[in-house]
Length: 225
Figure 1 (cartoon, rainbow, N blue to C red):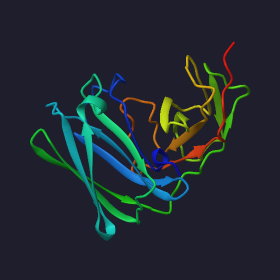
Figure 2 (figure 1 turned 135 degrees about the horizontal axis):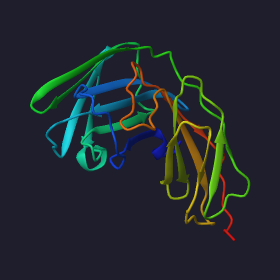
Figure 3 (figure 1 turned 90 degrees about the vertical axis):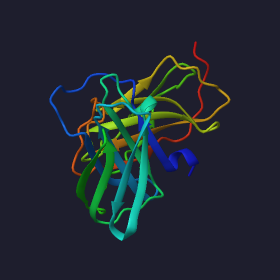
Figure 4 (figure 1 turned 135 degrees about the vertical axis):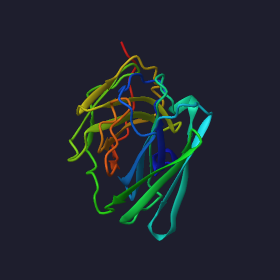
Protein backbone atom coordinates (compact mmCIF):
# COMPACT_ATOMS: atom_id res chain seq x y z
CA UNK A 1 0.00 0.00 0.00
CA UNK A 2 1.37 3.41 -0.92
CA UNK A 3 2.63 5.60 1.87
CA UNK A 4 -0.03 8.28 1.34
CA UNK A 5 -2.79 5.70 1.73
CA UNK A 6 -1.54 4.49 5.11
CA UNK A 7 -2.17 7.62 7.11
CA UNK A 8 -3.96 10.85 6.41
CA UNK A 9 -4.98 14.14 7.89
CA UNK A 10 -7.59 16.40 6.42
CA UNK A 11 -7.54 19.97 7.63
CA UNK A 12 -10.17 22.36 6.41
CA UNK A 13 -9.20 25.88 7.33
CA UNK A 14 -10.79 27.47 4.27
CA UNK A 15 -14.37 26.51 5.02
CA UNK A 16 -16.68 29.10 6.54
CA UNK A 17 -19.64 29.35 8.84
CA UNK A 18 -20.45 27.75 12.19
CA UNK A 19 -23.13 27.79 14.85
CA UNK A 20 -23.26 30.85 17.12
CA UNK A 21 -24.46 28.74 20.05
CA UNK A 22 -21.69 28.46 22.71
CA UNK A 23 -20.18 24.98 22.67
CA UNK A 24 -17.36 23.09 24.33
CA UNK A 25 -13.84 24.24 23.58
CA UNK A 26 -12.79 20.65 22.87
CA UNK A 27 -14.90 18.09 21.04
CA UNK A 28 -13.22 14.88 20.00
CA UNK A 29 -13.89 11.32 18.97
CA UNK A 30 -11.93 8.30 17.83
CA UNK A 31 -12.83 5.02 16.16
CA UNK A 32 -11.89 2.49 13.53
CA UNK A 33 -10.46 3.02 10.05
CA UNK A 34 -11.31 0.09 7.77
CA UNK A 35 -8.76 -0.14 4.96
CA UNK A 36 -6.58 -3.09 3.93
CA UNK A 37 -5.98 -3.35 7.68
CA UNK A 38 -8.09 -1.87 10.49
CA UNK A 39 -6.50 1.21 12.03
CA UNK A 40 -7.85 4.30 13.73
CA UNK A 41 -9.64 7.47 12.71
CA UNK A 42 -10.25 10.64 14.70
CA UNK A 43 -12.17 13.90 14.53
CA UNK A 44 -11.32 17.05 16.49
CA UNK A 45 -13.19 20.35 16.85
CA UNK A 46 -11.52 23.08 18.93
CA UNK A 47 -12.90 26.51 19.84
CA UNK A 48 -10.08 28.61 21.28
CA UNK A 49 -10.69 32.26 22.04
CA UNK A 50 -6.99 32.89 21.68
CA UNK A 51 -5.44 31.86 18.37
CA UNK A 52 -2.01 30.24 18.88
CA UNK A 53 0.03 28.85 16.00
CA UNK A 54 -0.66 25.28 17.08
CA UNK A 55 -2.52 23.22 19.68
CA UNK A 56 -1.48 19.76 20.89
CA UNK A 57 -4.14 17.18 21.72
CA UNK A 58 -3.06 14.11 23.71
CA UNK A 59 -4.91 10.81 23.34
CA UNK A 60 -4.67 7.91 25.77
CA UNK A 61 -6.46 4.58 25.84
CA UNK A 62 -6.39 0.89 26.76
CA UNK A 63 -3.18 -1.11 26.71
CA UNK A 64 -0.98 1.96 26.99
CA UNK A 65 -2.34 3.57 23.83
CA UNK A 66 -0.88 7.06 23.53
CA UNK A 67 -0.41 9.63 20.79
CA UNK A 68 -0.25 13.40 20.38
CA UNK A 69 -2.12 15.14 17.59
CA UNK A 70 -0.95 18.63 16.62
CA UNK A 71 -3.32 21.03 14.90
CA UNK A 72 -1.77 23.96 13.05
CA UNK A 73 -3.60 27.28 12.95
CA UNK A 74 -2.71 27.89 9.30
CA UNK A 75 -4.50 24.75 8.13
CA UNK A 76 -7.07 23.81 10.79
CA UNK A 77 -8.55 27.20 11.70
CA UNK A 78 -11.65 28.38 9.84
CA UNK A 79 -12.47 32.06 9.29
CA UNK A 80 -14.91 31.82 12.22
CA UNK A 81 -12.06 30.91 14.58
CA UNK A 82 -13.13 27.26 15.00
CA UNK A 83 -10.38 24.69 14.40
CA UNK A 84 -11.21 21.24 13.10
CA UNK A 85 -9.49 18.24 11.63
CA UNK A 86 -10.07 14.61 10.73
CA UNK A 87 -7.34 12.01 10.40
CA UNK A 88 -6.79 8.33 9.77
CA UNK A 89 -3.92 5.88 10.11
CA UNK A 90 -4.03 2.21 9.13
CA UNK A 91 -0.93 1.45 11.24
CA UNK A 92 -2.52 2.41 14.57
CA UNK A 93 -4.75 -0.29 16.05
CA UNK A 94 -7.44 0.37 18.65
CA UNK A 95 -8.79 -1.98 21.28
CA UNK A 96 -12.21 -1.62 22.83
CA UNK A 97 -12.39 0.53 25.94
CA UNK A 98 -12.20 4.08 27.26
CA UNK A 99 -10.17 6.79 25.49
CA UNK A 100 -9.38 10.28 26.75
CA UNK A 101 -8.48 13.40 24.78
CA UNK A 102 -6.74 16.25 26.61
CA UNK A 103 -5.64 19.70 25.43
CA UNK A 104 -4.69 23.04 26.94
CA UNK A 105 -6.92 25.69 25.38
CA UNK A 106 -6.87 29.32 26.54
CA UNK A 107 -4.75 28.29 29.53
CA UNK A 108 -7.17 25.64 30.77
CA UNK A 109 -7.04 21.86 30.47
CA UNK A 110 -9.96 20.49 28.48
CA UNK A 111 -10.77 16.77 28.44
CA UNK A 112 -13.11 14.46 26.57
CA UNK A 113 -13.61 10.78 27.46
CA UNK A 114 -15.48 8.19 25.42
CA UNK A 115 -15.83 4.45 24.92
CA UNK A 116 -14.82 2.76 21.67
CA UNK A 117 -16.09 -0.50 20.22
CA UNK A 118 -13.13 -1.69 18.13
CA UNK A 119 -15.30 -4.29 16.39
CA UNK A 120 -17.54 -1.60 14.85
CA UNK A 121 -16.41 -0.69 11.33
CA UNK A 122 -17.78 0.95 8.21
CA UNK A 123 -17.93 -1.10 5.02
CA UNK A 124 -15.41 -0.30 2.30
CA UNK A 125 -17.26 1.13 -0.72
CA UNK A 126 -16.81 -0.10 -4.28
CA UNK A 127 -15.62 2.79 -6.47
CA UNK A 128 -16.31 3.00 -10.21
CA UNK A 129 -14.81 5.55 -12.60
CA UNK A 130 -17.09 7.13 -15.21
CA UNK A 131 -16.58 6.62 -18.91
CA UNK A 132 -13.72 8.40 -20.65
CA UNK A 133 -11.85 10.27 -17.90
CA UNK A 134 -9.93 13.13 -19.48
CA UNK A 135 -7.17 15.54 -18.56
CA UNK A 136 -9.88 18.04 -17.56
CA UNK A 137 -12.62 15.95 -15.92
CA UNK A 138 -12.98 12.73 -13.91
CA UNK A 139 -16.28 11.32 -12.58
CA UNK A 140 -16.77 8.57 -10.01
CA UNK A 141 -19.58 6.73 -8.27
CA UNK A 142 -19.48 4.41 -5.27
CA UNK A 143 -21.65 2.09 -3.22
CA UNK A 144 -23.15 3.31 0.05
CA UNK A 145 -21.43 2.41 3.30
CA UNK A 146 -24.00 1.66 5.99
CA UNK A 147 -23.57 4.05 8.91
CA UNK A 148 -21.75 6.70 6.86
CA UNK A 149 -23.24 10.19 6.60
CA UNK A 150 -20.42 11.87 4.69
CA UNK A 151 -17.74 10.96 2.18
CA UNK A 152 -14.30 12.42 1.61
CA UNK A 153 -13.39 11.80 -2.04
CA UNK A 154 -9.85 12.26 -3.32
CA UNK A 155 -8.42 12.12 -6.82
CA UNK A 156 -4.85 10.91 -6.44
CA UNK A 157 -1.92 10.69 -8.83
CA UNK A 158 -0.44 7.22 -8.35
CA UNK A 159 2.67 8.13 -10.33
CA UNK A 160 3.66 11.08 -8.13
CA UNK A 161 1.88 9.96 -4.91
CA UNK A 162 0.03 13.28 -4.61
CA UNK A 163 -3.56 14.34 -4.03
CA UNK A 164 -4.82 16.24 -7.07
CA UNK A 165 -8.30 17.25 -5.86
CA UNK A 166 -10.81 16.47 -3.12
CA UNK A 167 -14.51 16.84 -2.39
CA UNK A 168 -16.53 16.29 0.79
CA UNK A 169 -20.12 15.32 0.09
CA UNK A 170 -23.05 13.23 1.32
CA UNK A 171 -23.95 11.91 -2.16
CA UNK A 172 -22.68 8.74 -3.87
CA UNK A 173 -21.10 10.39 -6.90
CA UNK A 174 -18.90 13.33 -7.78
CA UNK A 175 -17.14 14.95 -10.72
CA UNK A 176 -13.75 16.61 -10.55
CA UNK A 177 -13.62 19.40 -13.14
CA UNK A 178 -11.18 22.03 -14.38
CA UNK A 179 -8.29 19.63 -13.96
CA UNK A 180 -4.88 19.63 -15.61
CA UNK A 181 -3.96 15.95 -15.56
CA UNK A 182 -1.06 14.27 -17.30
CA UNK A 183 -1.93 11.51 -19.83
CA UNK A 184 1.38 9.83 -18.98
CA UNK A 185 0.47 9.41 -15.30
CA UNK A 186 -1.76 6.89 -13.55
CA UNK A 187 -4.63 8.00 -11.31
CA UNK A 188 -7.19 6.58 -8.87
CA UNK A 189 -10.14 7.84 -6.85
CA UNK A 190 -10.23 7.15 -3.11
CA UNK A 191 -13.52 7.32 -1.20
CA UNK A 192 -13.48 7.64 2.60
CA UNK A 193 -16.89 7.11 4.23
CA UNK A 194 -17.20 8.71 7.66
CA UNK A 195 -19.70 8.22 10.47
CA UNK A 196 -20.25 11.97 10.71
CA UNK A 197 -21.48 14.58 8.26
CA UNK A 198 -18.01 15.96 7.60
CA UNK A 199 -19.40 18.22 4.86
CA UNK A 200 -20.65 20.68 7.52
CA UNK A 201 -18.43 23.30 9.13
CA UNK A 202 -17.65 22.37 11.79
CA UNK A 203 -18.73 18.73 11.53
CA UNK A 204 -20.85 17.02 14.15
CA UNK A 205 -18.66 15.01 16.52
CA UNK A 206 -20.23 11.58 17.14
CA UNK A 207 -19.64 9.34 20.16
CA UNK A 208 -17.45 7.11 17.95
CA UNK A 209 -15.91 8.32 14.71
CA UNK A 210 -15.32 5.57 12.14
CA UNK A 211 -13.92 5.79 8.62
CA UNK A 212 -13.17 3.37 5.80
CA UNK A 213 -11.43 3.41 2.44
CA UNK A 214 -12.62 2.31 -0.99
CA UNK A 215 -10.37 2.71 -4.04
CA UNK A 216 -11.03 2.63 -7.75
CA UNK A 217 -8.91 0.65 -10.16
CA UNK A 218 -5.98 2.66 -11.46
CA UNK A 219 -6.68 4.51 -14.70
CA UNK A 220 -5.14 6.87 -17.21
CA UNK A 221 -6.74 9.88 -18.88
CA UNK A 222 -7.11 10.99 -22.47
CA UNK A 223 -6.55 14.56 -23.68
CA UNK A 224 -9.69 16.66 -23.38
CA UNK A 225 -11.18 17.87 -26.69
